[in-house]
Length: 310
Picture (cartoon, rainbow, N blue to C red):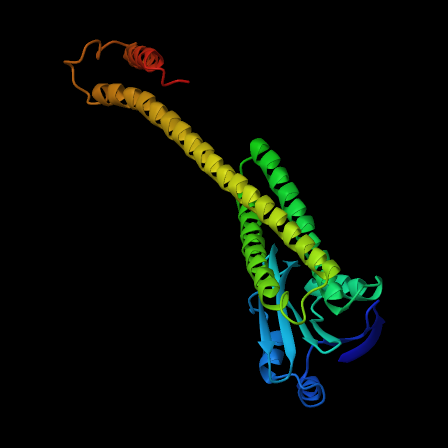
């Protein structure tokens, strides 16, 4: 579905064309009536499209692909998807998806375009992108809080579920960090290609673009710090689990040795020979128990001297 809205800026009237769930009919209209190339429209529907900028000199159109974060309910972790802006003359084209996971993206996109007055088309684009760069900080705070809760839970009870939750946090951080770096490269490329020359950015446009880059750099630093913390936490978990396993194996080994002693003693006296000491006594059963206890006590004392009982 194609929705066309006129937005007034201080410099010009901008037409915002928002396409929700691009269909074959919509694609034909945009291709024939709006002179958008099939290549640009393919970029708009590719959920794996990387963050970058492109120019279509033939149709005088520009494309900005900017990765935005969202929570994927299927994988139960944070990931990113490309948000496509196509600029042509005084028009800007955006593309939405009706998937429920993208509801926050769609709401923020709509709100960013409609509720604020901008100076120009590019000031509008950079302001919208700025709002989505702030969205990264929100997701990073959520992931950091999740990591903090996992750490507290793991200290109380180390379980596989906490490890799986930590893996989801790490996966989300990697996705966000990678997309942030790709966005940084894309915007630096945009500034280098489009920010100079005959139609260079105004001071307000350049300032807003700089604000976006600053927010992205800060988010990159936060994401990298969190990735390091999660990695250290994983190493700590591994050390704790290995230590617990060693403690368990040591305890089982000690108990195995202690329980082997009575078995050996009872085995000797179970051979029904008259040559064994006190074998013909009526209290031989008690003697074998006392002998076993004596050997166990000696072994326990040896283990204690070797500090194996701690």
